[in-house]
Length: 301
Image (cartoon, rainbow, N blue to C red):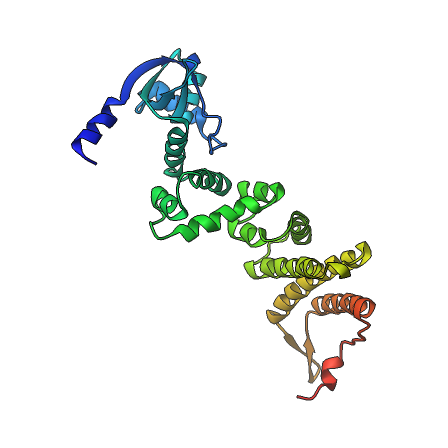
């Protein structure tokens, strides 16, 4: 930046004591959750305000916050009549861009808030420019594009991400599905602690069902068949979990008299058998395939 440009920027900045009643939060603020207001207020009460808020003037004589809404909320809770502020001349678009960048510089934004902030930046810049602006790296536009997929998730899934009950990478895996498909994934997963592989398997299964219907609309399944397919997706997920448990199964060898006896975890084996029987019934219903648990024994090796 040249000396003239720097001087122009400095001339646009004014330190002032503004009536708190004249200052208002940015209605388009990407950050929606503000934590630790009481703690910050206590710190300001004992140590004073270390950094003024940054605002821009608007046509009605008021001011909109660009940076420092958390500090402003703390000042309000303390009952301050005026707020130390740096006043800068910015239009709506530039003011929002600065607000986004100020929030992105902080590490306590939720993944959903971060995605919404990036979406707003993309209104005025490319993915690569946005990546550079928020510190991802000038050549990391793909990271921005990846994070934006979180906004394709249904509200229920976004809420789980906000609460930390679902990782953003899992949510983004499901973002390619329709609303109903995503809700189906959530229903199948329930409250289980699924691995990335198990979650991905459920998403792939639901995606295959949706894709088949879209590609062949003339063969669109009846509600009964769709319900059966959804049940099959649940069963396949259960099979995957059962197989994972069986792979970790420990076999106990005990001695009865002079003869050793092999005792395994029969409960898990029974669960797998029941799951297999459910798959068998569905396959016989949909495809007329007869299947038995011992079919593999008859196959040539």
